[in-house]
Length: 119
Image (cartoon, rainbow, N blue to C red; front, side, top):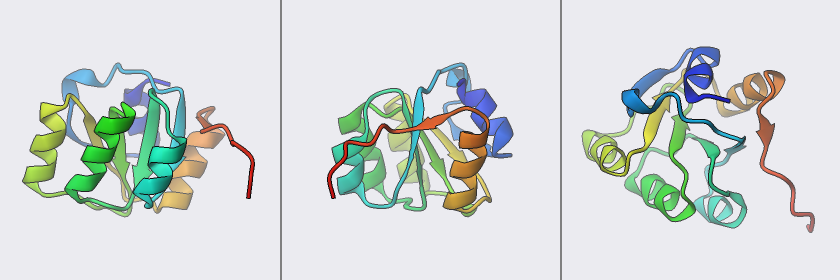
């Protein structure tokens, strides 16, 4: 799914990466635990989170995530936005809660990260 479509579906605002909105994402992962992001995410994954600190950007760098959607209308500081911009990331912000945002994307064909089983 193109990121511009994600933006439209979630009625999101683009905080940075406006020129990259044609970027494709293959699946989505909603999470506030960056350790889980490190464990489960692959490239071309869209991350939905309520965290707005620099660690989110650093974690995205390590996992080759280029698109982050901040939920609940959260907006990171300019420092975080600039860090994402330097890394050619797209940052979006939606007023939807995490559960609803994930549901909207799933209902429109964007699958979640494949389960790895286990407890």
